Length: 299
Image (tube, rainbow, N blue to C red; front, side, top):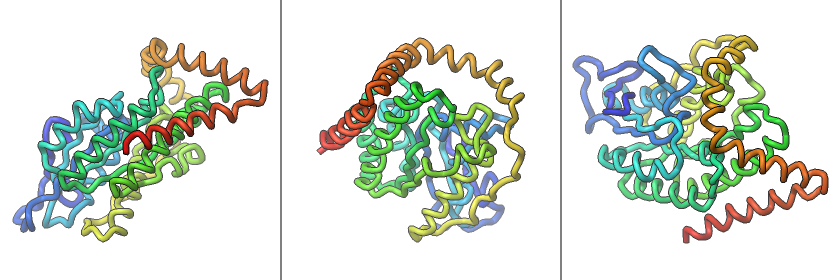
């Protein structure tokens, strides 16, 4: 699961079993994306594991094996996938490629749905054209996960809806195996979220892996046994939430305060005035039109 090179995986452990017969070589699986796919929220001794690494162990029968490379990195935008991760992925000639991105795009003051759509379409098109079967997912709204006040949450939700509209359309266009990740019960089941409330917990990552495994199986792909759900632990309590905010959350907020926060506060002011005037729906319509125009511009 190293970003620096592939890890050969058998069914549930590193390396193919001794004396195993390889049928046509191992399945090559590459993951592109941001912190969600990097595995944040699912810690192991040497870093993060995450849903893609869990899924990799179940992508082929034991006698075949899997070579998995995780190129995802925290903070990545759609443009970063196109410029940095895509060339490395193409060089690995993957048979399966996961492309999950867009959450960080919504958390930037310079959010541009047209640019996000263009870069994502390019990544999916290049990988699909190289012969890779693609895995994609729409994403939950970060404002809802973080339980932000409505004037702050609604502009983020509007952006996330636009990104998901684009992801849905491009997933159909490139015939991907698409997971409606946004519809999983993140807010209702706290144990599925890590202490930061933005990323899945270890159990949440396994939920994602199991859903992708189910979709691939339904598409007729030969697979290994489904990922185990993992031990269910109690959800992070208030003390854990406060500890994360004290030790790590404040650094995240400081990093975003110079980028997202000024723009988000401006959006919140506009949102508040719109709510008083009863014109909030107009901004929803504007963003919906922007997403449609972004897709139309792709041809």
